[in-house]
Image 1: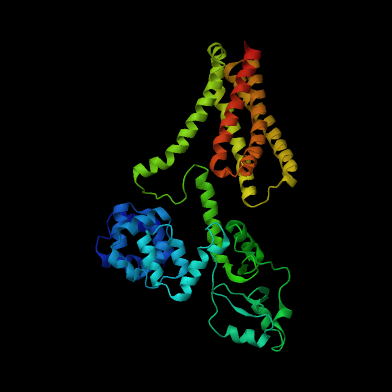
Image 2: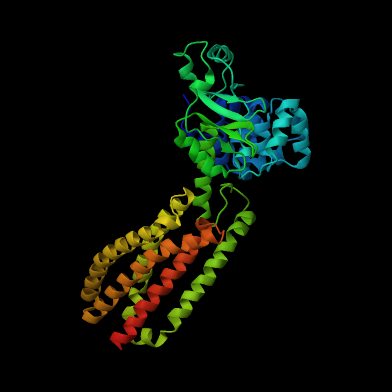
Length: 445
C-alpha cells in the first residue's frame, strides 16, 4: 500500500530517508509513476534532484511523462547526456509527443531515433496537428476489420491481445475510410457467419482530427464508449481518442482555466525560481494596478463628498465587495458554460433574465440587511437608504457584467478565464463607487 503523499514529502524534505540511492529506491519501489511525479513536484528543487538521481533509469521516462512542464524541465536539464539513451530505450510516439515542448532539440532527435519505424510514422502524423486538435493525441492501437468481415473474423481478432479501452471493432472500406463501429459484446451473441456491418451501432459519428481537443474529449466522456474513432478530412480512419486520454485532456483544460483566472500558467512549478515566478505574475499585477487607479480616479471625483461624510469612506469596501462577489459567481457560471459549449446566442436572453432575477432577489435581501446595519451603526436613516440602493444597483449590475463580460471576450477570441475576473472587478468597483458616492452626494449633502 502506498504511503500517504504528505508523509513521504515530510520524509524527503526532512532528509530522514538520507541521500543513499538504495534508500530512495526502497521508498519509491511500491509507488506508481503518477504518485512519484506528484512527489517530485512537491519537493524543493535540491531534494527533488537527489530523489531523481536515485531513481532507476527505466522508470524515469514514465515519471517525466506524468509531470508538469516546468518541474519536468528542471530534471531534464539536470540529467547527464549519457543517461538519455537508456531512458529513451522504450519510448513510443505518445511519450515523445507529451515531452516534445520540454526537450531540447538534441534530445528530441535522440528520442526520435529510438522509435521504431511505425512509431516514427505515428509521431510524424501527430505533429501535423497542433496540440489543440484531436489528431495530435490519438491512440493508434485499434481493432480494425474490413467492412465486409464476418463475426467469426471478429472473434478471431479478439483472441489476440486486446489494447486497453477497446470495447469496439472499427470497420473500414477498401480506402481505409471509417464505415462503422461494432461493440465487442455483440459478437458473443451473434451467429459467426453474420456480417459485422449488420451489427454496427447507429448514430456513432467519428471525431475529426482537426476538432478542438476539449470539445472532442467531452464527446468521448458522454458517448458511452471506451473510445471514439478519429478520421481525417477525407473520412480515413487515423486512430481513436480513448477515455483515459480524454479525461486527462479535460482535467488539463480545467486546471488551465483555474490557473488562468489568476493570470498564471498551469505548468508553473511550486518551487520555480523566484525571478521566474515574479516575472510570470508581474503582468497581471500591473494590469490590476491600472484598473485600481481607474477605480481610484472615479472615487477622486467625489473627494468633497468624502470629506464631508466620512461614513461613506467607511462603507465603500462593503459596496465593492458585495458587487465583486456577486459578479464573480455569475462569471464563473458563464465561463464554464462557454467552455462546455452550453452558452449560445439562442439561450443568451433567457440566461440574462435568469441572472437578473437572481441578482434582484439577492440585491433586495442584502441591501436591506446592510441598510439596517448601516442605520444602527451610524444612526443615520438617509445613509442606510443610500447604501441600500447602492448595494441593490451594484449587485444587479454585477449580474449583467458577469454575463456579458465573458461572452464579449469570447467573441473577441480572448480567453474569458484569463482576463474576465480583472475586467469584472473593475466594472463592479466603478459602478459600486459611482452609485454609492453619487447617491451620497445627492441625498447626504
